[in-house]
Amino acid sequence: MLKVDLRRIFAVRGVREPFKTLRGLGISHSTAWNLLNGRVRSISYRHMELICERLNCTPNDLYAWKPDREGVDVERHPLRGLMRDDSAADIGNILNEVPLDKLKEAREMLASLRNGDHSESSV
Image 1 (cartoon, rainbow, N blue to C red):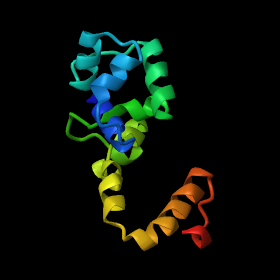
Image 2: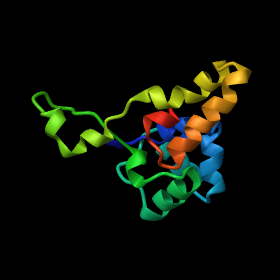
Image 3: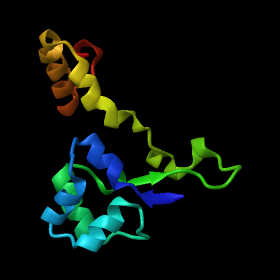
Image 4: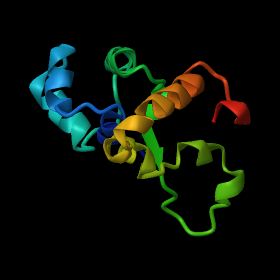
């Protein structure tokens, strides 16, 4: 089943008050609530654009896919890229546990990933 999964992307981005953030984007109370609670069948292009601009993400990042039928060849399915691993949302907790003297190293590693440098020498 393909669904809009905003809670995950807000958690990944460290947004602690997603409802307040959506309201700040001009999204109505009821629409914001429905978006955050997975009670939507679609999302307007305007809302999608506002959310993606705020979270620095793509529309694909707003969706999650989990096969709802047996026998689906997940490895070959075009939607496999939308299967989500919740480990990304835990990065804030991991960083909170990194010793202070190692934070500069962690920051440099993350900056190299952000800048597109995926070489092993930068990791």
